[in-house]
Image 1 (cartoon, rainbow, N blue to C red):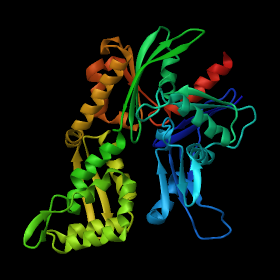
Image 2 (cartoon, rainbow, N blue to C red):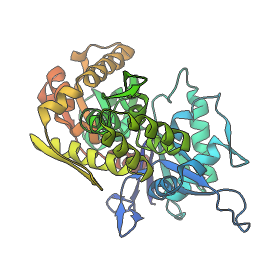
Image 3 (spheres, rainbow, N blue to C red):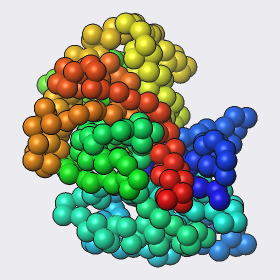
Image 4 (cartoon, rainbow, N blue to C red):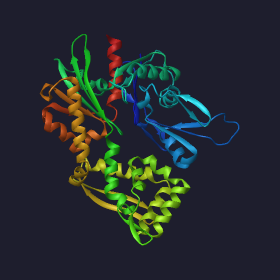
Length: 419
């Protein structure tokens, strides 16, 4: 029996296949001449005016991003769909004249990442300890999640807790009961769960506490952009109105907080506003560089360059941010110590969220036997240091930073079938 483990994430998604008597392999999604094992959890709708196409067309992952960048004002990009599952106030939305339930939208995405139905396969879907939002309805969240998988063509669906899956390869080898803190760092959110593992023939897992925060890799990327890139595009400079120097509107640069928000600035009124400010700016070249960046849809390319810098800083004490477009060029060496200084406020909030998870479990940090960290941001040395300082180097481990949840889900499924 083949086990399919699906980590449908808020920011990224991963699918793993575990065949009978085989090893778990991560599904790779073709993109251009290559393939990706981690796909962005995004969905884009657009219309092309062709009467042969009933209703809006759609794409997922990188193709959705390309469609959005091609015409952001005439398309609809949907992100973080998972975060609405437990929110009863969000039931449906209108897209180019058609009504889509939340489950329908997630189904469209799942159809794009799931393999064609495999005979006798069992699908293990990850679910959070608690769904996102204020006062989420967890029963509703799981009900909607199951409905989306069913509509995507999978009727034999089981669920497992994502933090359990994240550390499963590690905890399945435990020989004694243990209380484990799982830190799962995504692109947009970081989640911390305290779980109690009881090994043995009837292995049990109990969720003791949980807390999450909207700080992760994308936030760290923004700190780099805000410090290095935005000043080169006019942030912090001035322009003149009737003889008085005024600051360039800071709202221009708040859109850099998320890569897709920059595309929304292509609205004609916004472009005219920036051009007007540039005419009397102390550094008009910087504002016009901002205009070209917006007009030429380079927000995503900029974020990829910044994300690459961040990854290099996880391995080296210094790295170079390189970004070139026409006459706008950045080639600046960044020290890891400087980067860590920029993200210090975020690290404090992450630490406070760990405190909240422990408080929710009613435990002190000495009660934690092991800490397992996963997700790309867990590779940032300052993030890992946050945990080794508090819990000790010997109690902190990690692994499978990008695929551990999906692999763990498949292993959970295999163990369930063998029981």
